[in-house]
Length: 347
Image 1: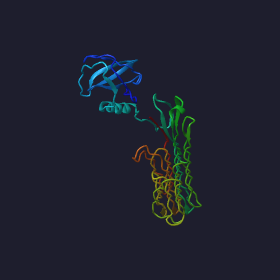
Image 2 (image 1 turned 30 degrees about the vertical axis):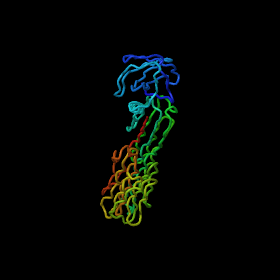
Image 3 (image 1 turned 180 degrees about the horizontal axis):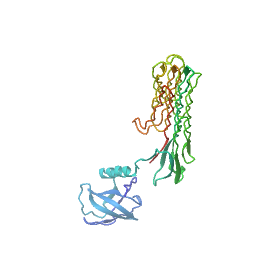
Image 4 (image 1 turned 90 degrees about the horizontal axis):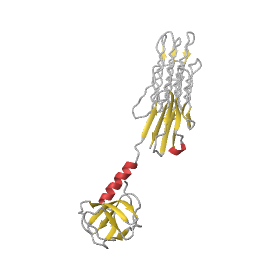
C-alpha cells in the first residue's frame, strides 16, 4: 500500500502498550490519514501504521532500526516523515510511472489498435506512402531530353493528446508506396489523423528539366535537364520543403530530393549510347521513389532523387530504390515509393 501523509497529525496513547502489541489505541485518531501506510513515533520507537479504524491503529513494530518497546498511557504518538517513508515514497512514484508503450505499423495494410488500460497520454505519428518516381524521357530522334523526377515523400502528421479523447479501438491504415509514376496512398489513425500520400514524380520531357513530385516532409528532386548533360551528380537534399530542381544548363543534373534523408540526383551524360544515371536512393518510411535517367541520341539527363521519409530511429533505414539507369536502347524507369507508417506511443 502506498505511503501517505498528513499535516500536524498527533495524539497520545489512550492506554499503555506492550512491546508485542500490534494495535494501538489513541485518544483521537482524526488527524491521522484514513487509508494507506504512514509512520508514527512513540518515545524512541518508529511504528509503521498499516490501517486506522477510528482511534485504533494497526501497526508493525520496531521499524527503521528502532526496537519495539512498551509505552505508557499518555505517551505522545506523532506522525513523522522518516528516511524509510521517503524511500517508500520514491518506490511508490516509480511504480506509478507507466513505461511508454510503443506500437509501430510499418507494413502497408489495415489494422486495429486497442487502447491499453491505465494510460493517460497518447502520441501518434502518421506518414503517408511515398510517391513513385517518374521514368526518364526516351527518344531515338531528339538530342536533348530530361530524366524523370523523384516522387514526393508521404505527408507526416504528429499529434499528442489525452487518451480519454480516443476511442477504445482505432482502425489504423498504412499507406502503400506508389509504383513508378503513381501517387502514394494515404495513411491514417482512424479519423483523427489522415496523412496524404506523396505525389508521383513527373516523367522526363524533351523541353527542359522536369518538376519533382510534391510531398509532406520532402518533395522529390526534379529530373536532370537536357542539352549537353555532363557526368556530375546532384547534391544532397535540403532539410525540409521541396526537392531541388534539375538543371538544363551546366551541370545538367537531376535535382536532389528534399529532407536530409532525400536521395541525390543522378549523373547526366553526353554521347551516343552512354548511361544517364537514375536518382539516388532516399531513406525512411514513406520516402519517394527516385527518377529514371533519360535516353536520347546524345544528351542524357540524370534522374531526380526521391523525397526523404520518416525515420523511426537514427539509423538510415528502410532504404528506397534508386531510379533506373538509361541504356543505349531505353530510358531508365522510376522506382516505387516506400510504404508509410503509423507509430503510437502511450504512457
